[in-house]
Length: 423
Image (cartoon, rainbow, N blue to C red):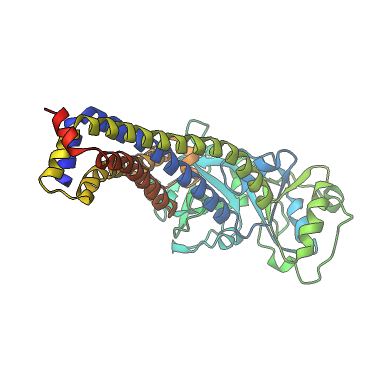
């Protein structure tokens, strides 16, 4: 019966191909939406883990989060270096890690920071050591893989974070790779980390003479630390330094900080706070509206494919009613007849499902390879989602149901009358 079904499908090859393609498009659309939304949400969660608040220059809070946490946008501006010390003195702040952005190397961002940043992201050294002096750099796993950079290699950063190497180069201030990080599956895999003083030196900014500026300040925050809520950033800085940072990643040490600190920061004249969880929820809500519309269209496409299979089988069975009647005369059971017709629908559905799954993953792979921002978001064509099994089962069910209705109609026909009419 399977061989007979394949013969019937080959006999109407064009109709068979069109039905397979129509179903494949519906399956592929659902797979693309599923992979994109799930991987995007998972990546957002992984990259922001441990970061309770981001402080930066006034502007768009979402832009601040995208640029400082996910490194896929341009920063809102810079803030005085004294902002770091101001945050570390606030009660309830467990950790405040500064970031200095502005340059890149082969589309990978160079981030001035402290060793506490890779520790916060759960990154460990694969070989080498952590940066300790200006112009020393530690590269993420993806940076190492795609550039081939090894320990001791020197490279020159270029101005800008647009993803290309067309901008002016800082030839006079090369970096040297002193360490490589193990893969983490987070944004740090595609970053080049160095000291903040390195970023200042590249742009001709003299580092403050304060011996602890730009260093780790774990000792600066102790339990029961001093509360400077009434002090502004301008009042806090006795001597304003020209050195600046792009933003500060904050981890809370007590629940009360989550309530008090954002308002305190937003009252400063040149600062704003943004909470990753809040901004990402808003972004996903906005994206979700469009995804729901496309998802509904994909479901409609699958149902249309099912209707097309139904019409095609119904038409084909009308043309070969004599064949079905002859099969019953020579002893084919009702179950065999139903199975033969159902197998045609399942073969069509299985072929459409397989093609749709391959097409969906292929589109994700092509998009990640050709659009740098999608690649930076971590889209992976080789990752499979449990929801794909549900999509495949639904497609097979549509094909089976579309085939069973014509199959039962064949069984209700009169054998003698059918044979007489087919002479």
